[in-house]
Length: 306
Figure 1 (cartoon, helix red, strand yellow):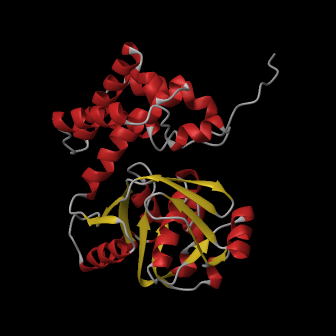
Figure 2 (tube, one colour):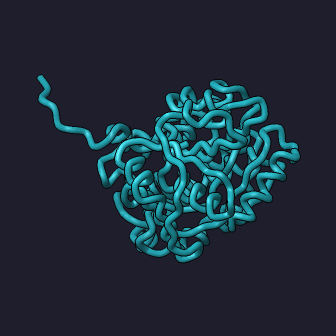
């Protein structure tokens, strides 16, 4: 469900591994896939075009074994309503959204028993209709919200490994979700705030210190949620940021520069909300959230005011 950077990559790899794949897409992206196939460009997985089923009508697909739910968070509720015709008694809905709230929101719509939560360490983008470019990353972690490693997540692990991914069935998916939220919100927030790249942030001592403080602040919120993030993890993330290509930008910065909607509430907004829930002040994240709020629904247009 959704054929952007993540959905397109998963669809291509699973199809190449011999699985029966149908892409749910819309608009020019759907037209391109139907006419020319789904194209993947990747230094790791190779350049390939696969012929897959594609439609904008879930009713035409019928019940399936697995729904990879790859839409953006701001389209989540509408998309969740549309997948009901594809859900049978044993259907798994595997979430791939950023943030920590999507599995529960989807569970509210279709039944939590269907949901398996996923955390993608893959950076890929839809660069043209029907064409996905994979930048980096092969790690894909998923698990039951209960923490049990069930037979169904073990089967998923096998299927994704056969498709070429570094897949792992986790017994601590909540910890995985919060870990990704912590480092992703940090780098996304500071890069979007400064309209720069990680290389520019590294070049300025004060801005690098801001990034570190944002990171530490989010770990305090995670701890309040019962997720312990160690000093070693913080140091490892800072080291990761220090080794990224200097022009590296998160997808939200790409959307911001293009004037598109951004997942502000999913990332930085979630930190602020969970902080309030636990009575924690989050001044660094609140400042970033407030500065980016006018851009949440795309680049704002000037209006005349009395």
